[in-house]
Length: 395
Image (cartoon, rainbow, N blue to C red; front, side, top):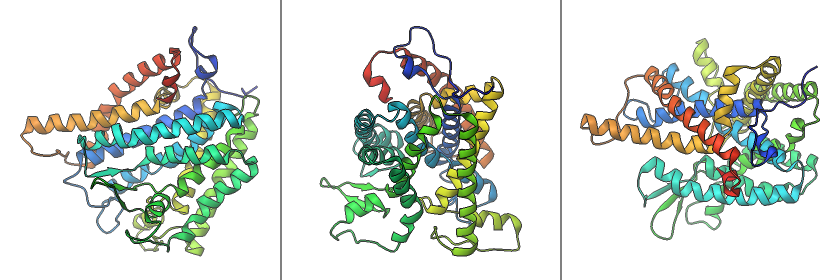
């Protein structure tokens, strides 16, 4: 008989048995996207003087760089959706408890984005531009979700689907920098710069409207992973969600021309044709972008569950180590990558960041960085599970 709930092994004497129990397949999927993120950020730090301005520009990008960037597209949608699932699992449907946790953690992540995360990218304590990226988007989406969870589950899921699928109807709405409401609209849907009172600016790299929808869908799917949930039913739900997402993506791209500002242009060259089909807009995340990535994410999660139920898998457990303390890994890998590049530049006498010569080097360097980060994350995860300190839950 298959197990209804797959848990990682918790050590005796853990501060909280409820916190120590984790769903291996969810942590493994989170760990996988963290590794893909590591590859993409290695590209950001170590390929600056060799890559094109936009690695998804089909007119300038070779397939190796294009698909390297494409693989990283899974990261934000999967991570945000799993954040919603984890929020439900944290409180088991207790909206008061979930709301308080979401609000506090959301504020914490917003502060983290404009401090430690921005410093990791720039090594500048007073930057001219603050980049509001994925951690900001997760934090702000958590604040909104803290309010939305008071709705019935069906209503919450409907709002999530409406935001994910319908926000592209607003693509034509743009506001000038001096227009009333510009800052709010830039936060919600228009990727833009917001002037700050002290002369700096904030770049809304991740407008949050679609990400609120993704997190709401994840929270609505939380009961699929309840302790008493039947694995077969959960597997069917994941497969149905994946199939529905990918079929709808095909309909949008092939017949309706909706859901992305970048249309699909069929060509006689098979590879370029496929690249055009999956060349989707991430900023802000389009409906097609989210259908592709969330559909694939659901398929991979179902696969990881089947592998884990079939028996202990070292690969799955290894990925789950990273997924068990993802925020620690996120901060650590940014500082390691940036610091390593600065050290390499100093050794080579370079005035700025140094670059590797090819896409293959990006993957090799990312694999090299992943090893010490994995061991450090495993150690931190052990300390986090054993610690009675309340603030450790936020890391």
